Image 1 (cartoon, rainbow, N blue to C red):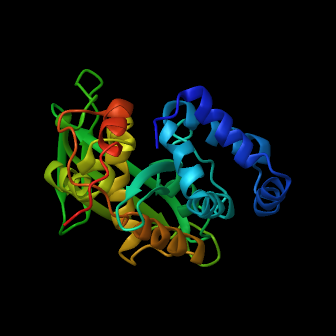
Image 2 (cartoon, helix red, strand yellow):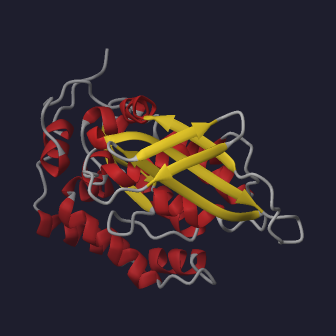
Length: 275
């Protein structure tokens, strides 16, 4: 299928989402969640301008986009890179020989959902950059991090470590007053997580466009996934669906140095079958 221009992609996206039954579907899912269905669908159309492959996924596999957006709406999150809660990722599936839509939950989306549990009093994920003072005592469960506004904090190369900290409340909703739960990761841990991600190792998507929030997301997702933090079914279901999305098959041949939207176009134009 030939590459779609941004204008054509947006038209295809708008035509697909404008059908009355689809508008009714998302209106029902977003009821009482504080999100305007029109703003929800407009956020998807905005991403189509930057990623015409999303529109191609609609044409070739509309069921996958509906699945992603249904998960997003049911979770009460906003889709699109502008919001940083729920990233839509177009991927080529060699198994099904078509472009499909998958997703990654952003750092802001994980924070939003974690706070919905009545026993989660505070959620924080921070990055430590080169030139900042940082000490972690795992035995005592304490962190000393002295922020320095003069250091570079623009890329993954500037990172020394990342940590997530969750403070819990009692079942009655009062602050528990104990030591927070902490998860500390090194820069190597964060880069390893990027390398394991389909979008990270192929060089497109949020790991290229929003590397710092994605790095923050790594320790936060770890601590929310390991069972130490109380979770509602909503978060368990969302993380499970995201794991399924990461298993989508992709071509192995790609332009090695291409990044961002240009890299996305270069890589997804390759459709060879994986051996």
